[in-house]
Image (cartoon, rainbow, N blue to C red):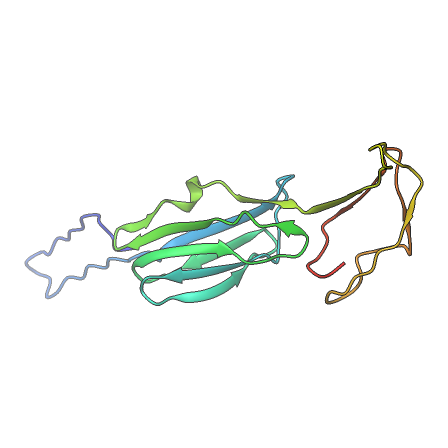
Length: 171
């Protein structure tokens, strides 16, 4: 950010030279990511692009933040990338870097909130009555370790089995 404050100096007649130092500050913008309980989310990726050609994917740190500093002048857009176990908010956000600073000021922006995804299986009879105690087996054809801790699951008293934070994949 270019300093907009005035600066001056005084040179006396007996000085052969005078010096003036003006320091510009690096611009600074932060992206904050939290879950539905307002806990910081680490490891969430955002694609950040600009009309000046800037394009980079950044990932939130342990404090749920991405800190951007020293960005060139331009209009920037950032959008969350797919993240297993959570529902993306699907929005693109913008900010502008000018010589005079960044707008909007990231300290005034709310954190971007993710909610856990949820899958609910409902078992009913032909009349629509909930059936409890019915056994289901699930399989996972996605990448990585299966999210299922057991070989089979029983429907509860309301005829449901609920899973949260399932990773992407075929089930």
